[in-house]
Image (cartoon, rainbow, N blue to C red; front, top):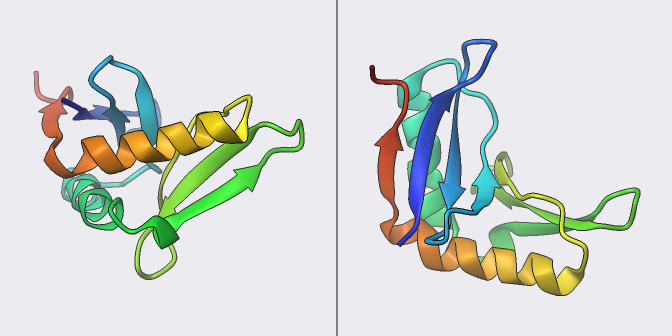
Length: 111
């Protein structure tokens, strides 16, 4: 089962990573100035991950593949790692679709 990990960046912003059941990070968020905004981003991933049209497939300059997950308003809510192949990227998208809806949330910002 996947999980969202909320953490704090060095600049004080909050972010989340979605990890697959094997612990691999499959989606990383932008920075959020507040924890409630970060939590809203997680809910947006849960909602939008089931819609294939919300996944923007891209190629980097070095020809590796990656994807962004976008909200209904077109804003990027999460980005993937770089993949050596389009097939790897598609597997990453499938993993987000599988893991996001029921992933638990772990908050690493609480001491």
